[in-house]
Image (cartoon, rainbow, N blue to C red; front, side):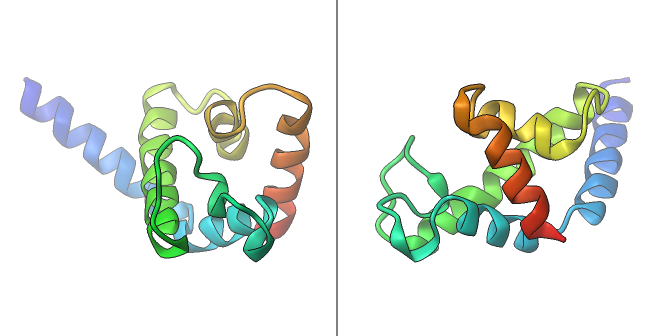
Length: 106
């Protein structure tokens, strides 16, 4: 039974990953977070990153994990809004972050 549940979750996650371009979303987050003109590339502040390449890997991992959490939550809202709740918690910048990342992904 557990194996069937795990297999089902992996299939759902794979489908969502196919729909969300991780690289494109990471590019959008990079720009929304200030690009090359920021102290924290990709907005990564929770862990120390040695360079922008490592920050990008952390960002892509965060996107991937958020897809899995979003699937488990039943896709209760658009993915970018769901991810923003954790990546850019509700505060004055939250809605701007959602708008900017959404626009940059188009």
